[in-house]
Length: 152
Image 1: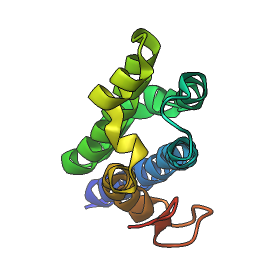
Image 2: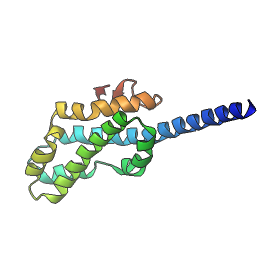
Image 3: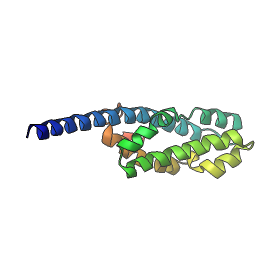
Image 4: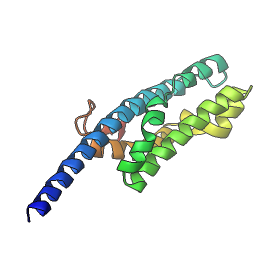
């Protein structure tokens, strides 16, 4: 009986530690997503023909927190929620890659990132990620129910 109680207590402690770790990792992701959301809102204000400004804005998009945490997040998050994060970061990474490797920024943004220049595209991109983040990061320093300017 004592071994069962000890095992149960260890399991609870491990679950609590994992939940705390998950919240911490997602807090990093939340800051990065909010930063990227602001960059994309600013990008919508730039004329697409101003290629230097478009490139500069896209160079401000960040994926560092994702790169540093994705393996552990894959272990801690349910698959569906992890897939929302993957989809978001795949789109951000494709846009960064497209603009850095194409000479014609207009073609690159059209082919890989037209969504950046539309409110609907931004909403689509951040809506599911916002739901995941707000589920776990309740004390995140934003208005509850919002990531960036989009209701979640």
